[in-house]
Length: 275
Image 1 (tube, helix red, strand yellow):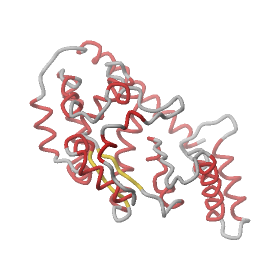
Image 2 (spheres, one colour; image 1 turned 90 degrees about the horizontal axis):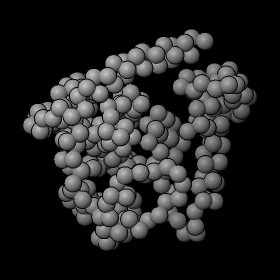
Image 3 (cartoon, helix red, strand yellow; image 1 turned 60 degrees about the horizontal axis):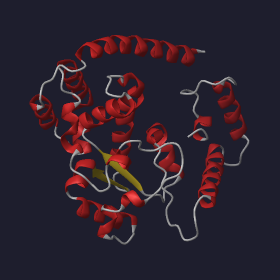
Image 4 (cartoon, one colour; image 1 turned 120 degrees about the horizontal axis):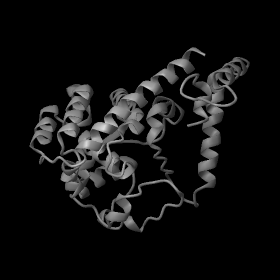
């Protein structure tokens, strides 16, 4: 991500003045035989060498699943045209609930995830629509309810042999590092259908339901259709979810604070854009 952002004038605030650095890199690229194309090719080779050093002999794939790659998704596809791209869609209402529970500790602090809930969904839907011929899409819900068939389809796309035990032994894969899923990998030892309706308990109070309705309207029927969801069904699920008044007072407080945070962030973005 930081390597590709050396060609992006916006989106980075740094002590060294990022926009000035981008201009310098652009000027440097003009002196290369093939311009920016040569620069991107060198970035590609650097990344491939690092991946190779991080793997054991015989590895066919290196999985790089950085969530905010949606910000550079077109550049990644252009740099690695031979790669395999898997788009994992999920019910937006469940995504909201997961963010609240995982990172907000039950509090409605969604302003921290504004870039993912808004820019992210636009970037991913746009990229999949443009490159659906070379990508593979799968819904999270389908993996939970029809795991063998969906995983078999994914393995076929990857050109790998499928063994049904992978759906019940994934907890044996240990990933080093400080990041990753802090919840699911610890709670579940095998694929479970529990997350299918777990979100209903999180978005239960009137404030949260109202926010989710506005969000679904913003996402729109067309984007949801690309993701494999029907907007009317999602509205029906939201309306039929049990009602609760838990967190109502704190949600009102956090929504006010959220509006102030968003306004401040936009002001900062405008300032960075014009300076």
